[in-house]
Length: 357
Image (cartoon, rainbow, N blue to C red; front, top):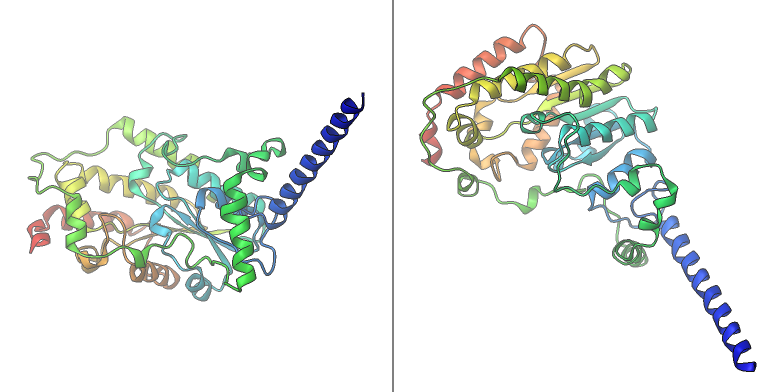
């Protein structure tokens, strides 16, 4: 009988200890909240910013800001400090590497719904990701729905996550104790200093194939898919928030991308048409702006500005922000068709052999 009482007492104590430990872990994770799921950053804690698909949702919901920088990896090198200086705002950056329009549009919408103070959105309009079904997401990208679905009952996947506890909470508290400053939005997902630039690194992504003999535009089906995607994931937010200024830009991919992905494949006219349709749809709204940098041929044809076919240097990222703030390279309803006619003529007739000299 005594043994039975002893075991019962031991079991109760073990359960109480386990419950207390679980409560302590949950309280610690919720207090530090490295993914900002429950609240914004706690003053004094040295936060690690390095996981955009797990941290972006909390950032756009719970930080204090009035400007959002978002888009694909071509926006990861943007410095919020420069954007703040140029536009007179307080910005956050929430990029989605490899993100299709659905994912970025949802993140943008979450920010707009969560923060009534937003007055500026800067976003990339990548042509490749535009050509997809309106509901398509990158299947290779993380999709942490337990953080984004507003369902408290599945937050245990976050609160009782060993990686969250040890790789973030524990690491952040150690950094805090050592006096190491927290990460900031200038460096959040920035890779500009980590990737070498130049022809040797860019040209390996394309074959020295012959140009196509015939060139084609979009099919009716492609055009309809594009329009549905744009209207669902791009212009729906512009229309819903007329008091917000939307600065959208077409990222300047390098000359090697034009050759390998459009001259060789024969779809350069289709590529131009995608940009025209994007521009036309966005410019239907008075609170929207479109910027395109393909007329800066010195930029696009200089492979020293690029680390691969699509990604440009930190200096180019700064230049894009500076141009948008000044209104340079901005397209208007009166100018965009002539602009793209000139772009098509230049890139269709460019001497691509110069890339290898």
